[in-house]
Structures are given as C-alpha cells and as structure tokens.
Length: 397
Image (cartoon, rainbow, N blue to C red):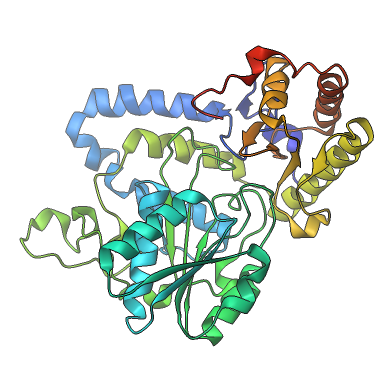
C-alpha cells in the first residue's frame, strides 16, 4: 500500500491551511526548491552554456516525458514535454485534422475547458475549408460521433463538475467512425489511473501544474501513439522538433519520433522543478491514489450535505463517474469561497455558481477534509460570506 504519510512529508504545506485546490495548482514539493537552486547555482551559474551538454539540459524534455508517460500508461519515447497546454492542444488537433483531410467536423462538448475550444476555433478558422467545431452536451458525445467527424477533442475530467468520460469507450466509438481521438488529461494525470495505451488513444495532452505539482506555468506534455510517431505532422515546425537541430539546415525535416512535437528551447528551470516534483510519485500506486481520493471525496460530500443543506451537489454522485474533485452550487458561490479562503480552507470558484474542491491523497488527510467541512458549515450557518469584502472579484477566481 502507498504510504500517504510519507508522501505528505515531501511537500511544503503552510501550517494551519487546508489545501483543497490541488486540482488547480499543486503545492510546492520540497525537492523542487533544492533542485532549482542547484540548477541555477551549479549548472547555470557554474557551467553556463556548457550545461546543455554537461548537465544534459538538451534531453531533459525527453527524460521528463518518460516519467509522465509512466503515470498515463504511455510507453517510453511517446511523450514530449515543453510549451503550454494550449500549444499542445493546437499541435495534437492540427495533426489529427491532417490525417482526415476529407472530413470537416471537430467534435467536443460543452463541459470542455474553454481554452481548448478557443484553440480549436482559432485553428479551424485559420485553416478554412469549411471546418466546423461542433459542441454537444457531455452525455451526448458518444451519439454525436459519426462519419463527418475528423477528430474528437475531449477533456477526460470535466473541470467544472469532475464528471468523468469513458476514454476507452469513446475512443473505440471514434475509431469505429474513422475519427481520430484527442484527449486532454489536465484533470486526469496524477488524479486517476490513466492508460492511453489500453484505451488506444491517438493523441493526449495535459498540464503538469495541477496534480503533478510542477509549479505555476509548468511545461505541458503531449502523447503521440507510437503508430503515428513518424508520420504525425508537427504543424509548429520549431527547431527542437527538427531531425538534427544543430545542423541548422534551411529546410525542416521532422524528427522520426514524438520529439517532432518539441517546438522551442526547453524551459530548463521549469523542467527541473517538474522533474523534482515527479520524484513524489516514485513507489506510488495509482490504484491506491484512486481509492483514497474516493474515500476523501465521499466523506466530504457526506459531511457537507449533512452540515450545509443550502449547497447543491453539482458533481456526479457515483464516485466511479467523477475524477478527483467535487463541486457544489450556490448563487453566492464566489463570496462563499472567499470566506472559506479567509478561514484558511483553500478551494476555488468557477462561474457562474460553482465552488470546487480537489482531493489529492499525496498530501491531504481525512481529518483535514472533515475540518474543512466544519469551517464551511460555520461560513454557511453564520452567513460569513455575506460580507461586502467577499463580493469583490479578484482577477483570478
């Protein structure tokens, strides 16, 4: 069994704070601080440009990609890291569309993260040729997959409610219709067991600053199924995706592997922090993580519903149908969350009325979950949220 007391000791957690927002930004791994300091002082400071070779900075994206791959069921050499999630969505969707030039529809759902939809819309407008972004309700995705669909673009776990899509079933439906399946794992990687190989996904992308604890703005990743590794069109033809970056050829030749999905110079400091953060996953069993996250979230739901009847559960009640987060609805959701934060319970708010909580067994205990619900009860019963200071919205909610 995974020792969650031992993993908790690997993180910097402010005393007195109950952190239920790891689904938005993971806490600081203690190893990351030391690792980045070493890269700055010993490698950058001591080696300067030599460190691209002496510290092997140039291959850091590949090494980190393989470590992420182990958490999402991807074989070695099939995951590249770097850039942002939006760029990786753009690359994956562009490559998928190039594989189905005779089709015109990208299918997604209304629960997808808006940024994915913005990227898709911008790409389709740029490409022209009558391409369409078709949105349906999350529960209607399977029935909407037909032979007009070039690619599906689905986020496995709904960022609002935690609703969980069936990756294997929807991928099989897409393939049966001749479509390419692109998955966003932003709220899956490190939260639930993921196996892109078993699900036969074509492409998968994700961020690393949530459940993987890589830090704010940490590099994203992209998985390309090995069958497409030497044929997927990288679209963004950056020099790090070239077959021989330091040959400085004037013509672009993509690398023969997932490395073709690299674009610009690797963000070494950010990758070093992420690499150190991934140390926390050594010896961790994802089945244990899933079982514990369900225990924590089920206890949370039961306590909140008993203590706070004015809050309405927005997440699926069946834990098998949701990821590692729980959301409740209330017309004053923003103010409620600000009152909670003022009382050292950290979750977040998603418009128009959702208060959202993440359950991260690597550092969250059941005692903290219960304590958080008691504070939430105090906020609701005492109407602590009904303070004008909590109604003023910050830039980041």
